[in-house]
Image 1 (cartoon, rainbow, N blue to C red):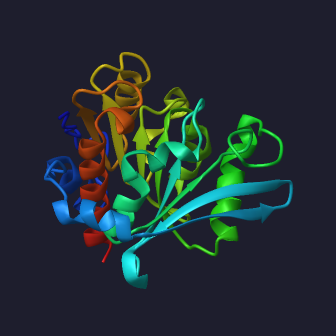
Image 2: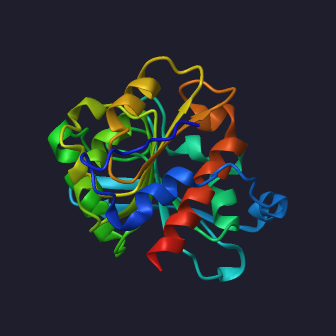
Amino acid sequence: MVLVHHQPHHQPTTSGSGSLLERADLSHPIPENARKLAQLAEYDESRVEMGTHSVFVREARPPGAHYAKATVLFLHGQSFSSATWTENDLLRTFAALGYRAIAIDLPGSGQTRGPSLPQPQKPTFLMDFIETLGLKQVMVVSASMSAQFVIPLMTSSRHLSCVVLVAPSNTHEVLNSSSYVVPTLVLWGERDTSLGPTAAANLKNLPTVKLQKIPDAGHACYLHNPKCFENLCVNFFDLIRSYHH
């Protein structure tokens, strides 16, 4: 675990939440019965029409139509699709823990119809998608290259309540760290020698951030060590919810 200690003259920590996140132990295991309940989660696939794109959506909801604590949006990496997040019952496990879990095929990938997007249009697409679903705020899990959709939106909490960046690309574009106000968990596999460590170095001065290496895992650490990945994400989400209320 890498803990970031801010020097007071660099960065006033917003409302103490930054230091709270630094000190938090996010590794405690989620209840085993959640993994059993995963099979009972409601799951379906649909399309969301957005002008030039017909977006393919996978969604898992808490069993028995229970109220969802929050919506978590999963964004895949470059050579993947939303199917990534169905491996190891990942979407259903988050649903069993009380979250509405949504994974989409990003433009140019999987079963989404419509053109690939140039980089400057990616954050606008994500914002439009969140608004099209009628959601106020979402939690986002973003793998690798999908960080291009997310990082530019992190300067405002209008659409994002928190973000998990998994070995994200494009972190060199984060220049004025203090303006990235959305609470962030940065994860990478211990065998990832490129994007992960680079991202950790580039993001360590965000106002509210935790950097966490995942053992026994490479670049796609959510596939290599899914239990550890789920524990860290769910504990992070629960912590964010507890200090937002």
